[in-house]
Image (cartoon, rainbow over all chains, first blue to last red):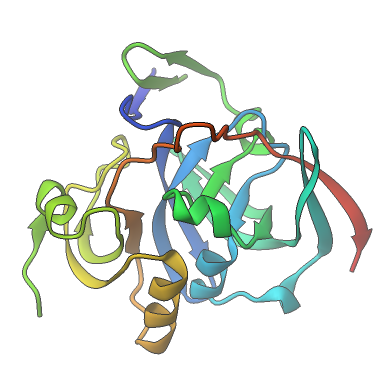
Length: 132
Length: 88
């Protein structure tokens, strides 16, 4: 059985639906489908709205891009993330101030830690992610 | 309370703004919500965050950008790699 998920080809990056569950309930946001991100990343604003704070952090984390360090943040475990028809519970995510990305309309990245658990196929011209 | 708007109406009324939608219908197979009631909106996500935190929490709200994610000319969106620098 396959399930088809759409992303909008008019956007510069593939954005997909997700539901993030925290201690204060859940919030639905879009995530960038980002195979190049080592870890799933959520903006500090979203994390705080879900009832978490830096006090819940497990580790300090630094984001690196091609030219070196970009930003410092921390990781924590969130209750669950629902994305692409699957639920991932008690999952560790990286938390950063997405100051630059939020200005571009982005508040989270679905990273390779989650993506690698999926059997999927992308049909780029149709804007489809097909999950097996 | 404000009335429920379609996603196209939300984009028309709040162009390039961050919106918090309640009573939102959103098909998880689609990248955009179908409709919702705009509870809060702001140009910057940080401003919207302040409005949300001052108000009562609403379970299962949708918080989205009502515009196209298009990077300005000359800006490249990089994949981020991560390095754990220490344990807390």
